[in-house]
Image (cartoon, rainbow, N blue to C red; front, side, top):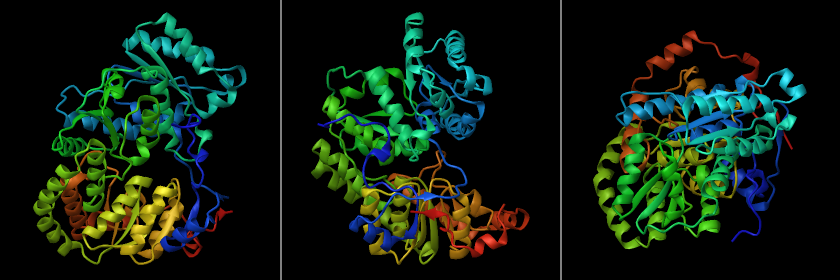
Length: 481
């Protein structure tokens, strides 16, 4: 059991680095020596804050409303999660597609001077009166945190006025952490405090909590559920497309696992501490190696080691001839990868299935889990560039211009404008995970390489907002220690 409660700020754990420019071999050696120190950037081109991750984590919950106590602009990037939610409904056969219910208090200069608690109170009342939800999630922001508005007191007070609606305040002020995954932790801490409340419930022997973020497609969900069903597990898929009833069933599970280790790793530790639910802390199941590791991890927790080895053997027999065909199309191609910490390292391991060469890797955080992945990657790839960056596109375009990869895997906008063939691995619309997702993703990469015409034409007509002189500079010149 933990000696003290986790704060929800990932920097509270030692050895995590957010700003770094180096190579795979250097970062491994320096981490082993304890020489990686927290750095900073003297110039940064924006950051992803934790509030959007807190909102995205819960945005598809049934019978919920979401009140952001913030300026209007703070929810601007929620559009991605909204898009995923709408597409996910279509994939699940829902005909009457709807948007999530988001209300913004629109904190302004007057609110900053005189306080915004009245605005928040009115916004929550309007949301509950209009939608009659089972849950009202109330999100803090940098602005409301700085002026000291007490969202907890308001939520508690309104809980008496609206007893049929569960008021859940979430402390996801963006300035609390530079690691945007802390936003996931803030959401789960609130769920544990205000919904689960450490209450014991009867256990269900075959139930497994499967935590998944917004960016997991419905096809990936079905693949993970298929794999777990083969070892006798019934899945409680949460919190994406979940409900209050499913959330309340979390403590009833026999075990927990996550599709993305960065998404729910801290919460699964809490479930072990508070409810005695064992969990598998493994990898994101992208590619043969990582899918095997993920599958064996949860099977070990469930005591199904023998059964899972038989299943893995059959899956390999089924997919390896198809992977070999993809290898013939992709072998030797050089690739740059950008994504979240779990997804980027998983994709970097995936390309070895296809015989591709890793030349660059960009990811927001480096820690002991990343060190394990780097040790593996250094064994299969030549020296490659590592950029630890939370949304710093000016570094990315500089590196891509220098390295000239054959393909880019990740959020594709900047690389596409350089004419590089791109494949989106952060895609909640198509399969990427498990044994079947591997084949789809490989074919997608190969098709992009064979038909890069759109990106080439895009590069001819779109100019990136950087001077030519920037491409001659050291991409890591603004990182200081």
